Each structure stands twice: as C-alpha cells, then as structure tokens.
Image (cartoon, rainbow, N blue to C red):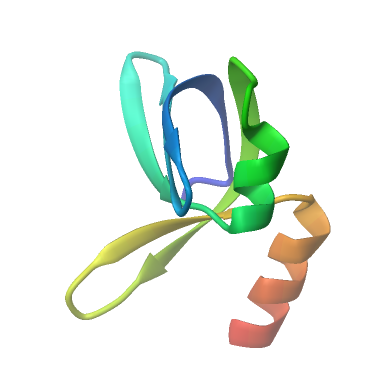
Length: 76
C-alpha cells in the first residue's frame, strides 16, 4: 500500500492531482479541500489510501493525516 506521496505537482484540477515522485506519476482522487490547499504550490505531500474495488484501483488523498486514520477506522 502507498501510505503517502511527496512530490512535484504536474497537473491539478478539482477532483484530480498528478504528483510526480521518483520518476513515476501518481494520479490521485482528491477532495475540493485538498485542491484548495495545494493550488498554487509546486510540491505537495498527501497521505493516501489505495481503495480496491471490483472494477478499479483508486488512490485517495487525505489532508491532514487524521482524516486518513478516521477513514481507515470506519472501513476496516
């Protein structure tokens, strides 16, 4: 599982962020709150959760880390 990603923001729009780190680009589903917090920045650190569904693998963001802990508590 990918716990967090720190890297350069390559693309950013409401609901989606492409973060480059270590030569790889990670496409994340982001909240509007996260979009507002990282807009205008060159780099970002996002805590993540890989959500596995029957037809998709989604990488979700969480700012701050407490939101990730709460999400994992609810769905595990």
